[in-house]
Image 1: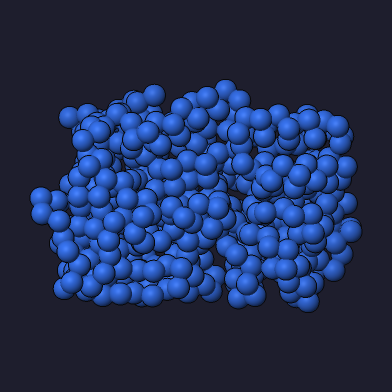
Image 2: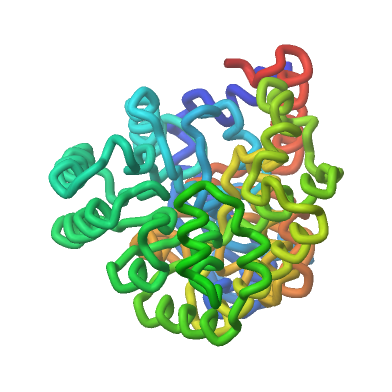
Length: 456
């Protein structure tokens, strides 16, 4: 029965008649995550898949015959986004976990050619209101050596991907300087975003000047903050462990100068702190005891302990790993305070990053690093919409925007952990209330416990 609820409520085609319904959340507190403002005693009205009205509860008309969510004591935020995921392997199997956790948007960072048609079909089904799931923006696997070795190959591959309709191109560590700058030029010419890692042969400062739209993770950033950057870069290029050198030669002034270059160049940062926390725990021979592994597919869970040890801090002693994680948090705090724009991302399904749940952990780590709860919320709501150039439809609770919102039982501006206290989720005007959310979770847990996967 639970499996049927999951399939009917989330993954399989839903009834078009739902599109004309009216929903009203009455007498709630609306959270403007763009400015960190809370407006109490408000009501918000949804018709079909759009927000159609919002205002004071005492004067906002509520259409007759609609579904009412009584919002007294509730707090409403825009739907959350995870801006660094890999759904190519898990596909729709874990999408209920995203919705249950209030995630209504995802940025896929490395789809395979094999999965591209399926992801495109999923996008079309969601856009046509035939399927209920998070909004999905996606790109192909990263451009990297040895597949891309020179300028000609680089430009040809960008052109091929542009012809597929992709709006952003991911780059990776092994690219040569010639290939990287050719990709950057081609992306500028075609109006595409270049996103991804900082290649080993290119400095973080050059990345900012080349127009890279977002930097994923913080490894290349730390490299550019070393007093012995050239020596450390040589070690990285020759597959030698440079972590301790980078810790010992960290230069605060270089870090601040680099951060200013990022700010001036409009580079967005996706720190994926949750990944680094797990890597730090692994080097201390610990695993995250708070990870909701009861919802994790067994074929993933089986390999996670080994994969976590081979993560970004592989080979470090536990003390150095803790120092490195603290330094990454400090870098992130400096970036945010100096005006570098931040995107919340988790690298799901990195070991112990369970879809949906990991985003709440990332928000908590952002606050631990020094961001306010309001600033952390912005990284998963307004900032993704602005970065993806879709703020006309997403990112805030305004009339005419897509009706993606989360109803919370407590104020997230007071404590970021309150984003986990979800009372209801609305996705494109489809209301998923507490009982259905619970049934969806139980359905996933039952399936992974019975079959080892969520029904593939």
